[in-house]
Image (cartoon, rainbow, N blue to C red; front, side, top):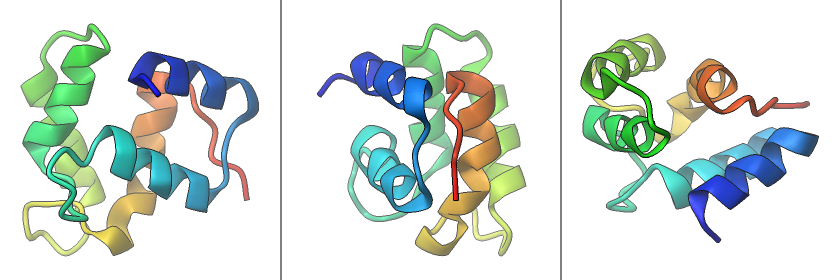
Length: 94
């Protein structure tokens, strides 16, 4: 499924946290290591047509990375919900 089609479908109905984690693994985690890097976030921002992708990715990685190890780990993926809501209009529902 393409990223744009996936985003459009998810934006219409929202998704729960498990669906969100699966979406992140499929669309953002390019190397499939379970960690989201600044470069992976920058790539999806760039693919969405946004400017200043590196700056925005650095900002959102630092915001979501609660243990400050430089990546968004599996336990921190929920912290990306604000990023996804802002850039893709996808609501995370309980």
